[in-house]
Length: 179
Image: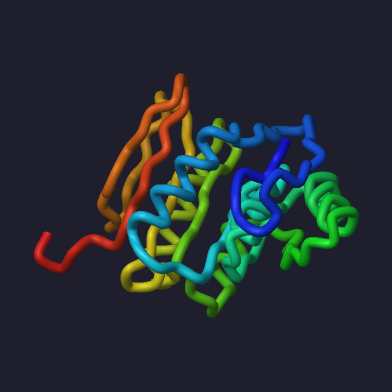
């Protein structure tokens, strides 16, 4: 799998195909980062449920200050090995994403959420981000989910939604006070 933009454009990331890993397709990654760039100037990026780490590498390539959170030890080692091989600095936390949200004091401009599809982690993560006010004022949450999965937006509003086959990418922001 190749990085689609930025200073590491075209570098090949070895892909993990184990556990619940489902790397985001290149056309979706490009569309996500193009949409983010069109919305404003963002500097911090949190890749929750990092899986293969491809979104982390895409964000780093585009000069985001990035934190990657992955609970699965095998997946985390895979990200670490790719980073070492390619000499790309990755701030990787091998930890439960929801617990990370419950404990962190850091806020972010962008959260990327792509948890295991058959889980309730979408709602848990959105709840913690809202409850702890972890999304910066003009920040954005990018949520990748199967079309069939419903999520509770927990005080966020949907800016944009794009369907790709059986997946949906949702772009969420803090709900305006007047809504």
